[in-house]
Length: 440
Image (cartoon, rainbow, N blue to C red; front, side, top):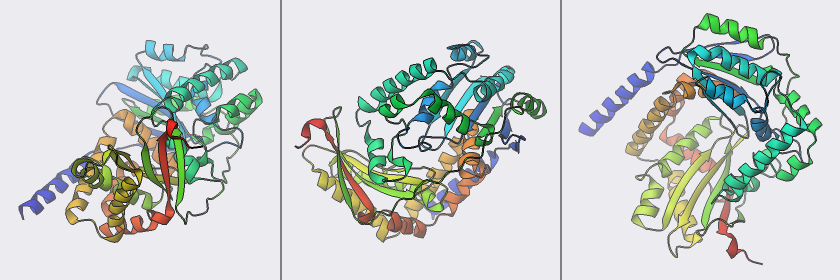
């Protein structure tokens, strides 16, 4: 009775906290198709301006991979009104910071300024959208930057090839088969006309969302947005029709080799639904159940109790069209990779075959409540979430109501999703080995 009472009190407190953290926002469209979201929070004199473009690594043609990631760098080169190499200097000299990142599905740029520099942030993002200078010198410079990043993060980083290996083995025809950073030979083969055409197609207002969040005044911010963005021409509507993958119906075995590691790894990879689908949320809960924290099922069993693994984890990797799901482990001593596969499958099978306990279910619910609260704990986080929920999920209000999806997921749904997506005949077993073990 005492345990039930404590769980009830904890759930009530979390509910009160979540409801108190409702994110208020206003959204509208400019005539050129740019979607604008404004969030006012005057608790600190800071403002985030950000633009998310619906373009990522998957948006490419064969032989021209990596353009979205190239543009992540290229659009800091300079504009008609921002001299080459001065972007970061302007931001830092005005008390701000900025960055950008690219996934397979979107590219995100943002600046954080003292709120008295809001107009500067809006001007800079409008410059990036309307007046970038894209020339051969800039392309050559940023190609070298991308190559160095690839060497640092992928080629020379232990286990750095794991994500590209997953994509290569889970997808045969969809663009997710190729790495987000692209292939260097594709960038080398591209022409300046290729790069300009890519920009003109994807970096247009009707393929973007602008978010302004923080210490702002809504009416004056609307006027600045109108002044700086309304005259940017609308682009052509973008059509996406990527090929669908055939289901995996028989276990596949693959090997990959990494010169940067001494300890091998093994993983069972599964193709899962895109993140808009309800089952993607269920799979997130399954990964947390299996491997989030030292008390999780896989960690306690294989690391603590049986001393078979140095590290073990289950990860749901969300993407727009298809997700990827990976259960992986690194062995201790002479533990074989086949033993690790067997032990991991045993825990996944339990989720497929029986309901998780009510106690474990309540722990999961509390964990996702905490995640939800933390995701809205900073202005930068809120700006990113607003952009992402609108652009990729088609529902900005998920910033307030996504937790209701997790709350509504039942133990029966958890079992059903594991049975639907995480069966042995649907997996790719990947042995990730030190390069010296390569066989002829």
